[in-house]
Image (cartoon, rainbow, N blue to C red; front, side, top):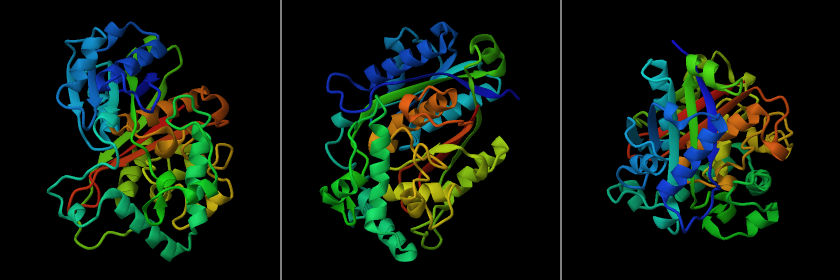
Length: 380
């Protein structure tokens, strides 16, 4: 079975794009990935497009804009993991021998769909009594404080770190550094979470071109980065209350990825994780096995998760700093991994990075732990 290599990456600026739609943004990202790969776009044999709220045939509209209409294409919806799932489908097509060159696109124009928090499905009885995403993560933060003694100031250090990283990322939604005092003074959302603890409503797109061994040898010019694992799981049925401070779904997905890549969490050099809220970063890096449970806030306080720290987390700025255009998020995480592993991340470059992990998790459904979780491992 062939290995899969990420050969080209492209990404729009994340933020507000009132003069573009999701197809425009996807086309821009696709053009960027083709230019980065340095290939004739006619080499692309198939496409997958991840998005959530953009309506029917968004991927087909993107391909039509760039002159690639007619390719086999599947639109993928899997909550916040939509773009990451598109990458997994593209990699499976290559591993199965169906294709040698495939593009995965993630796109979303959220500002034309929402002006505030995402609204839950009207049929969700938990959401009807207030268990919306901000409310759920606020409860998880409170429980973590109770179990492990994390302070509100320690939690605030996560958006401070991520927006400091985003300030060095020219494609990030936010380009301004903040302080702990700024976090604590920002507008309350769901106690103890405040505005700076939450990812924003963002427009944006990203794209990656993946190739088989055969194609990469011919076209990559040594710039390909191996996609060592791409795993996807959904949450199991809750037969008893799920822990508020540990994510079995994240660990099961990561464990499968580590096994496929032939590594352990101790081998990881840096990670992009799904920090939709500040407490989510805590839960996910511990769920990935990158830090011991109950210890991550103190590690952040010591600078261990900084770009020049022992194990950098979210060097791109994460969802809190870079932005969170749902379908675009999982692909953008892989774009960051590739640029870091190539040594192309500029002032936020992690020295000596060889193995990177991208974790994306999204959605909720009544009676299960989580809707979708993906873990991608890239190796230089």
